Image (cartoon, rainbow, N blue to C red; front, side):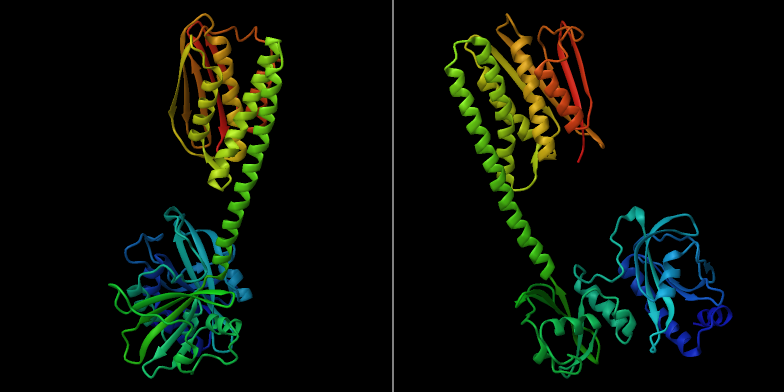
Amino acid sequence: MDTIEALCRKYTSLAPADIAVIQGMSTVLRALASWEEADIFVDCPCRDGDAIVVAEAKPDGAPSSYRKSVVGLLARRENEPAVARTLRLGVGTKQMKALTQENRRTVQSVEPIKNSAGKVIGALVREQRMDERRQASGRLHFSDRDPAKIANALAHMAGNDWLTECIDEALLIVDRTGRVAFCNSLARSLYQTLGYLDDPMGQRYENVRLAEVREEGEQAGYAAAEVTLGRHSLLVKQIRLAREDMAFAVIVQDLTWKREQEKQLVLKSAVVKEMHHRVKNSLQTVASLLRLQMRRLDDAALQDVLEESMNRILSIATTHELLSRSGVDEVMIGEVIRNIRNNIIRAFSRPDFHVQIRQEGDDFPVNSDTATSAALVINELLQNSLQYAFRGREQGGIRIVVSRGELYSCIEVIDDGCGYDTVAVRPDSLGLSIVRTMVEDRLHGSLKTESGSGGTHVMFDFRNQ
């Protein structure tokens, strides 16, 4: 307390009453730091425009970004733009990247501290280490916390109106007589939105109770219930407080937006399923027409051309069929390859020839564009192998190997056929044009081909989504 007063008198123009507010806040910093698993500081504005760190707290059970104390150090405007902005404008600054005095990267959130007249007298700074990858928000999240920790935090915050305004949910505290002894601004706003004309403060809780909640299970002193009031979906939590003057706290989380998004996702999923289902049906209809046309032709060369086109269309149709089942714009690459492989085996099955196509490697989700492009490429490569690699042979083998990388993933199609001269092959052939176009333009990858007497090895990669 003496340190805060000494620093404020030396560097700031704060009145004694304002210094007392800062001193009162310092008593809850330790609990707040442990709650948020973050380093907590109080900065006050200096006379020259910078800020001075007057109080700090490090978290218990979580790593701090600081080895040494920073109390008494200046937070200069050029080094602490978020603090300078909050002190100047009186608004919170959230999710800012920052660099500590010890050159550690943090995520910084700042909230203004105001006196009873609404004047900004300081800033509450919350810094979390970026390597921890925890969510850093400008408000305290009570939604998913342990009830005992919530009760402990509220016990420290009670009586500190400013700190309870940082909570991201509506908060009511009910005293032993059953009346609402405290409510934050989010609670007042919520009740107005729900149609209540009077402020819940001072009313009997049973008159403003939003849901009937009962304690069940092993968590004594805690109860929760979700309720729908008009268009609003609310999660109401009731937590018993271990204080003589306070009976329990009520935390209300507005889930309306979340539930609406869930409904939209369900609707979108149904639309995506129907869209892919119709595309699949249309492609299968085109393939059936080609099959009918093929049967009417006597020219074997034309029949082969139509059969190749039909297989290409069916490879795309297979991908859309998988997408229609999932309901999202995503499908497993392994399932796509498995269906392409089965279609190719059926199309090229002959009594006098046996081919084994093995699928190896990783399996992971890809979006519809990647799936359809990769399906066309794999279909084309398998067709080429089955048509040309095993001439004059009764059996053969093909391997499809999938390798997932950090930025790019790779698919290899390897056969043990007779091979071919990669230099002499026609660059304008339809099959090669399809493969190159899909790999380079659609998959944003590269294509490599090696062929010799031991077989052909084709490898292409594509950028991960």
